[in-house]
Length: 235
Ligand SMILES: Nc1ncnc2c1ncn2[C@@H]1O[C@H](COP(=O)(O)OP(=O)(O)O)[C@@H](O)[C@H]1O
Ligand SMILES: Nc1ccn([C@@H]2O[C@H](COP(=O)(O)OP(=O)(O)O)[C@@H](O)[C@H]2O)c(=O)n1
Image 1: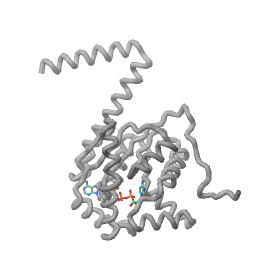
Image 2: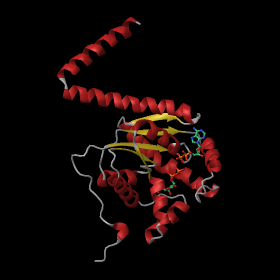
Image 3: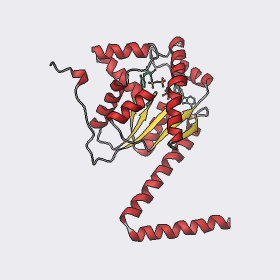
Image 4: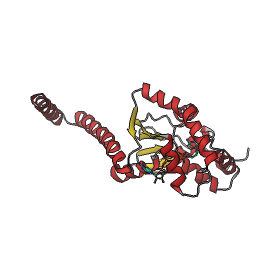
């Protein structure tokens, strides 16, 4: 059988490599990319945008690129095994061990394909909430020359968000993994809330590693937390 370069085998991720994943989801134009670049600057994650990876693939002028372009032009979701394999390839190519996956999963099929192919439990799922009017206004002013930023395609993308992404949101909410921020405010204000969520994750991770590695520090931490507890009660 002829090897097809576009469907070349990728993966799996070496077991034993501890990788952190955070999904960033929200409607089109909610500010996912904008917040991701702030998170990258402050917390050292690698930003992987499913949409950007697909747009890169379109530029390759392959049969797969043309297929992707047709889906994106209509505002439809590209088949999940394509987007998941692009994500896997990008994770493997990066030296980093923590990733923001932006614009993914967008439907249950995306989520299931991810669980089958990559299967790294996300630390949490950041949802950027924004009103439709505000998202529409932002997209129409985005001015990045994207051929899907036109009124007909935007309508279809909103419909996909309502019908296909909401079940994914509900899934992670049930699992206690959803962290929701109000994205209608200005980018710095939104980031204040986003930052607090990531800081909380760091604090939890530090406490776990201290507790695992050093019994004296564990005792000290316990003592401090006890003191802070008492302080709180006094206030
Ligand atoms: N909080 C915000 N307030 C106003 N404009 C914003 C905000 N966040 C992003 N934008 C602008 O809105 C447009 C869409 O943002 P972007 O981050 O590309 O959204 P998404 O990745 O969710 O599609 C961009 O032009 C961006 O500069
Ligand atoms: N998981 C994904 C993400 C994006 N896409 C495609 O990429 C398009 C643009 O997604 P994007 O995340 O770059 O942009 P926004 O729609 O969020 O503004 C979507 O409308 C889909 O056609 C996809 O098929 N599957």
